[in-house]
Figure 1: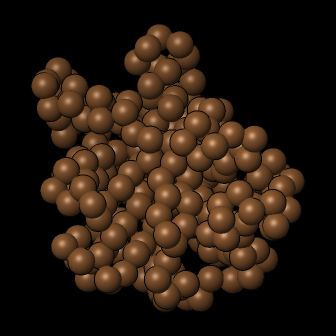
Figure 2 (figure 1 turned 60 degrees about the horizontal axis):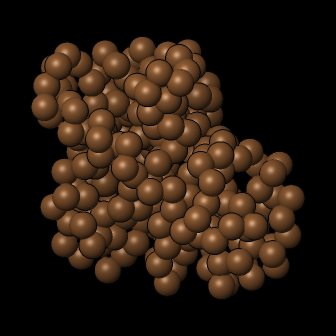
Length: 233
């Protein structure tokens, strides 16, 4: 059994599926945690959300998903709190949702409800999984929602020992801030390769193999997949 983490898909359905197919992901045996920001920017937010929701419902023990700040912006928009979602890829996501689910449908409502109920964190014996970071002043199950927006400077203000003490010596896997390579300081693993954000020359999508401490990188420029070791910061 292998364990994977994938974050910041941003509506890029084809790269997501190509990575899962490349590693021959088997949800009957393998585990995956999706680290938020499934939507916005890319062309297929509706297809991404639908695929992950189906996988989670069919294999609830092996497929987990958490919320990211882009899902949070969607929630704010739907609740009438803010329209900022539309400025950060929401228009593309709304178009995709309407194409996949219809403008008004029970299926669309069910997927929105699923998004609204996603947890902020997941954890198991191998790691702690979040979108952007964690506030160590709060318990893992009591994280405030503003941690969905935590930037790298805030997260790295904690020492390695502080993080490992907090997580009981488990690594924290996160996305949110784009990097060119998946990197770790042995406490935090940064997994967002910037697809839909960085220039295609540098952008990619990572499928992190937690079991073997490697990752698979889909290149937004060449549309090829490479297998790499996680780099030390």
